Amino acid sequence: MATALVLLIGVLLPCWGSFPPFKKGFTKPNGARCSHHSECYSDCCLINLDLGGAFCAPRARMTRTCLPQTKGAINIVCPCQGGLTCFHEDPNCNHQCRLI
Image 1 (cartoon, helix red, strand yellow):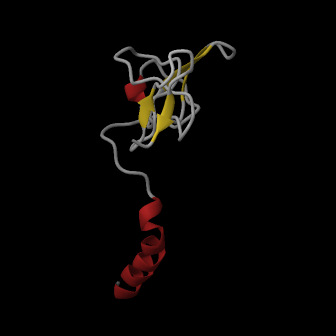
Image 2: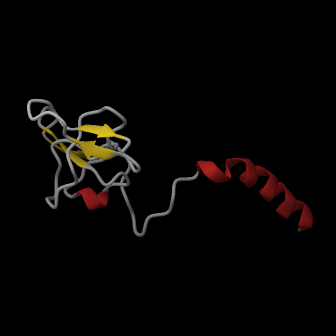
C-alpha cells in the first residue's frame, strides 16, 4: 500500500502545476459549440459565421485585438487573458490587450 502511494505521488508531483484550475460545473474546451460564454472553460463563446455557429475560443493574448467582456451570450471578439486589460488608445484603432 505504501509503495503504491509513493508511486502515485511520484507520478503526480511533477505535473502538479500543469493541471488547469478547477471551475464549478462542466465547461467545454476550446473549439466546442456553445451558446453562452459561461459554458466555456475560457469564458469566451465566439461567433464564427464561416462555420455557422458559436464556439469556445481562447482569450486574447498580449497586443491582440480584444473587446471587454459583454453581458451578452456570444462575443464577436474575445476579452483579454487574466492580468491584461483591453486598452483603447486611438479612436481609429482596435482595442488591444495590454499589461497595465
